[in-house]
Length: 228
Image (tube, rainbow, N blue to C red; front, side):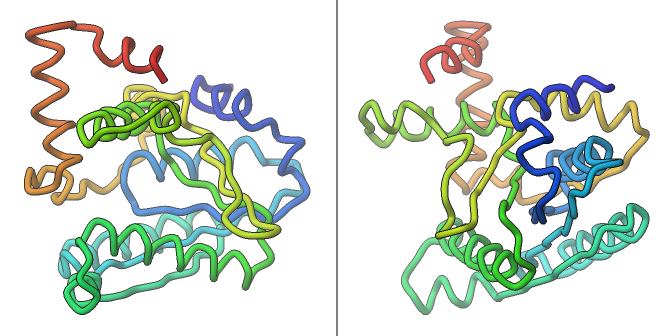
């Protein structure tokens, strides 16, 4: 069994979901593609039923359409049913006086809850990794947080009654994900907005963390992970 699959099963043992419907959030990016492939591989031979869900934010029209086409093709290949949602995030953010990031996150989870109810999924899984965890906690430190905020993203929580949210890759790194996909020779989509430094999380990822590693502690990621 491959390393990422072992990490997934250590975090979320198969017996907890082997006879249930699991809804997998997939964007087409490396993390979510790796999660989809790992869940498919580790559930083989069990009674687990996997369903994928993709949300089109209409923020990068041409690129996002290509993301959707990629996800449709991948799910067809893996014989995993796919549910699709879409919303004009920028317009709704303006109308409601919210930031684009906040509106995108809220709309995405609203969609996932709705689909989970529709298909009878007991769990919704997302592909957050340890890198996401570190970036989230550093963001909270910059804004000001207490001990609860320092605990980071929970590995599991309730989305609503009867539906859990699980992040089985939270102890895996982005390097683990990339190694796994390379081993499978599995392509994925690159989201250009992840390089847009207008977004705070991207500035943390591409500017602050590299600066901290270069100038203060080359193992700052491990230090923050210990703090969490």
